Image 1: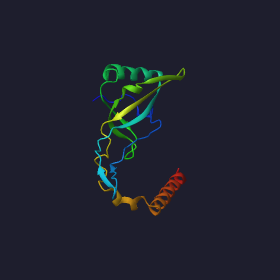
Image 2 (image 1 turned 90 degrees about the vertical axis):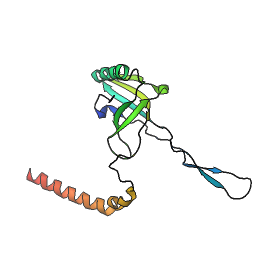
Image 3 (image 1 turned 135 degrees about the horizontal axis):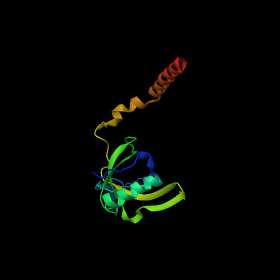
Image 4 (image 1 turned 180 degrees about the vertical axis):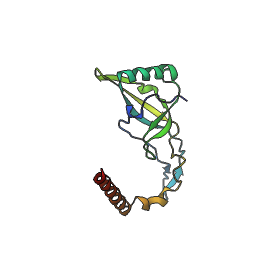
Length: 161
């Protein structure tokens, strides 16, 4: 669609934070026990990001932003690190409050910052719906065994070359 046109390494997740409200609230009564009430879960998720670009990349970026995204109005797809994957394609929109503040730290680079709204932030289709079943895969013993295996194989490779 309107894919981000530059390599993923130009996008920096500065101060990744996600504020998410509780999925429930309490209903206080004057006396007696407290009641709990579920809240809707369709809450917006935003991220603060920055784009660190060389001069020619800045020109490509500006053209994409102004012409393809109609000055940031249209949604776009970009690969970002998430809790689920190191490189997950997310559908996003720029938010107007922080639309591409720019600075130039030196004569070779441009930095732009923005806040984006994530429109499809969810586990990818290949992630198990019940990931807790796989908790033993990540236990200390499994990691130690994997480290030993990798180190042994790397040692053999280094010896052979």
